[in-house]
Length: 93
Image (cartoon, rainbow, N blue to C red):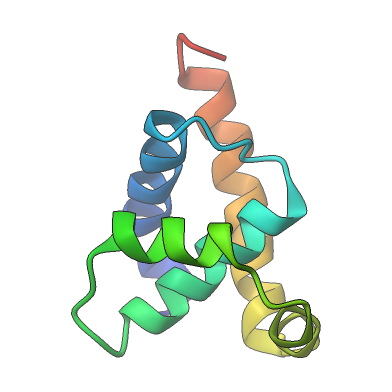
């Protein structure tokens, strides 16, 4: 998934986090969002189930490994931008 077509999936994940009452500013939540979207581009997955599964049992080893990749850094940059946009336009924040 390139940076140019990440906006819709990121917005969908942020909305899902709000529904599930997950703190979108938490680093573990950001990691889970990125991991689910990075996995989802390769497989047809249920985003809600995958997000909850990743959040309920995050792997610190995998988290550290993923955070060192360029792809994750690009996801994180796009995610932080979308979080800022989402918070500014969401009535519940």
